[in-house]
Image 1 (cartoon, rainbow, N blue to C red):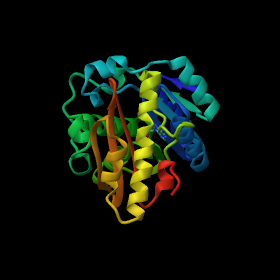
Image 2 (image 1 turned 135 degrees about the vertical axis):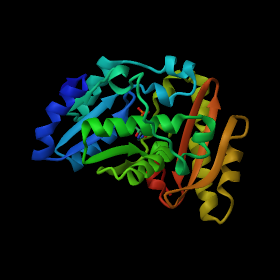
Image 3 (image 1 turned 180 degrees about the vertical axis):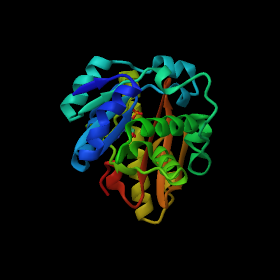
Amino acid sequence: MNVLRTVDAVRAHLAPLRVAGTIGFVPTMGALHEGHAALVRAARQVSTHVVASIFVNPTQFNDPADLAAYPRQEAQDAALAAAAGVDTLFVPNVGDIYDPREQVNVEVQGAAVGFEGAARPGHFNGVATVCVRLFAIVGPHVALFGQKDAQQVAVIRQVVRDRRLDVRIEVVPTVRDADRLALSSRNVRLSKDERRRAQAIPRALAAGLVAASNGRDPSAAARAELRGLDVEYADVTTFDGAPTLVVAVRVGRTRLIDNVPLEHPELAGLAR
Ligand code: AMP
């Protein structure tokens, strides 16, 4: 696996590979886990050269404490990336992606409104901006994102459509731990007791699914399971035409999100 740190190095390295084959791209913020590995394995299936990036994108954090506390562990990440099948790992510095003189920004409406967009002002503009820039640097044929961040997928699809970007977006099902909590880089912050309480989240999604299939209200069923937790939202919304039960919960100081597309629960790693 090549580890490259500059825009020029990535461009020079990928130019011939893009002509000879296809490039699959997995953007991440590091603190890699099996969810990221699943994206890499899916990228391997659909491309000849797999690029992953590790960049803790400052513009998508609305809370400076969250940005400061975000886990950074490059050596461990590089080992996991190589084992999962990454060919080129791009680890830019903030200065490679952002320039104090810049004047062109990406602002997203539509899919970015509400839920995470409401809870984290500016978050999706930051996500869209970094993805547009990473796509421009890497030039992938296909980019892969996790269902875990369903609204992010909808935002990225909108950016790709509206900007006429020549990249295919693929979605990879949510990977869960044995207790069915969705893998997340933020889970390491949970105490043992918080972890136990967080297990109400997958239970809530499962209860929502059962309710939906019985003609009852999925969000009411989910909220009943989440009683006693600090629930930010537990609602049904539509992403790219797919009705999706979305949940955001604070457990202690950790904010967790999860979701299930009601007509395709397998995408959430939950059985029907
Ligand atoms: P992050 O590093 O958290 O920005 O995530 C990078 C990519 O991994 C995003 O496309 C996420 O949706 C995806 N991802 C994060 N957690 C999971 C998971 N548990 N299962 C599948 N994909 C995930």
